[in-house]
Image 1 (cartoon, rainbow, N blue to C red):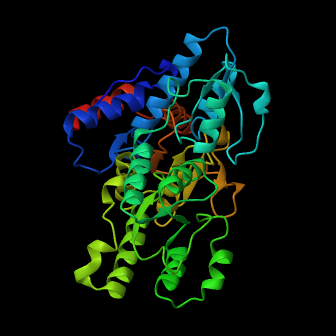
Image 2 (image 1 turned 120 degrees about the horizontal axis):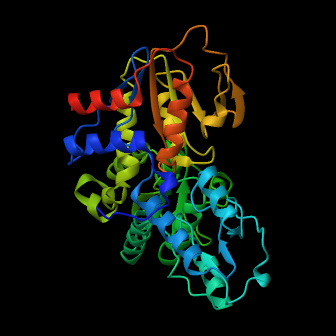
Image 3 (image 1 turned 30 degrees about the horizontal axis):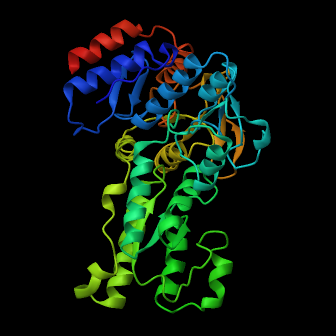
Length: 408
């Protein structure tokens, strides 16, 4: 695995050591059980996989290299490089400016950007239209393109599906940067449509089966399909790809559901001519993080804490899983943990901030801790240490780590 050069302040002495211990014991990543870090009156149950993934570390390395290599130039990012407020704030502090917000709203007019400026493409990638706009200005796009290789893998599979006359069904959120980029690429080579979940997939299946009137199609899937999409003919050969940060289990559920629909319509003997196998497009990091989270769900714990950006899709899905089994607090960093041991936390259902009651009168004995793929280990460290500050007579960090090494 490549070793990336990222700012040292994103690393951590505690979490870094935890990951090293687990990696030495389980180099092939076959054990998804959580790590127990014992501090005496408090146990942290830490996810086996969490934090910066390959694509995020790659994006961070390229972005900071762009800064160091161009001290006298204007440096722009198309939008947030990743969905983590701390990382994006640090890039802004280094003088980087965002051209658009995460929804695609223009913050800096294109006509103010010149060929002598630097434009960084974020980890989510970008649309063909925006890439061409950058090229038209005269800016070379490849040098500081941080698009995740696993996102590009989805693009390449979409292109292959199109060349074989398959329609591409994208499991994603249509307004998310990555899905907008994937749709743009897919649409170049194939008829394409976006479904956000299994419920929309079931509606799509009704059009495949002819159970739903074609006249309703444009209303149901507004702004989610190719301009010349014809549901009567373009759903006879399909393949499923995904926004890499979606729940892998949900993508699989969508794929399995559509497979059965197509099999029932065209017959088992003809399935290969109507349904493409796209299982290898799932992002390994997303899959590992979600599997590790599912293992956390079986842990007996008082509360769960998930750390990450509130607009982070992959982090939201980890929260979604843990909320099924534990009282879960979604926080961006240690500043959301108050002095009375209460949380300012993000509610993924209402999309609003909430505040928990204080835990000082009944200190938790077991806490689950994890983070999204765009969260620095250093941020997890700070959350862990802030929680520890509410306890008396705890084991030192050195003793807790020594015990971990001995047990592993």
